[in-house]
Amino acid sequence: MLFGLGWPEIAVITIVAILIFGPKKIPELGSTLGKTLRGFKEELKNPSDDSNPEEEKQ
Figure (cartoon, helix red, strand yellow):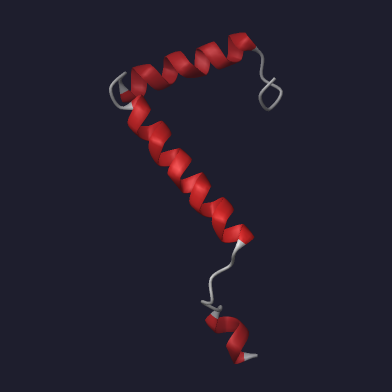
């Protein structure tokens, strides 16, 4: 399954997340996480021209 977790573990994690964040906040968190991962993936494919200042010093 997902990261070696079975359905019971996923169910417990989901219930805890709903208790902590509330059912209205969960879709917003999922959307934000998706956008973050998408941006990270795009940056890995096409690195920007910004270089690391520490690399320029060497």
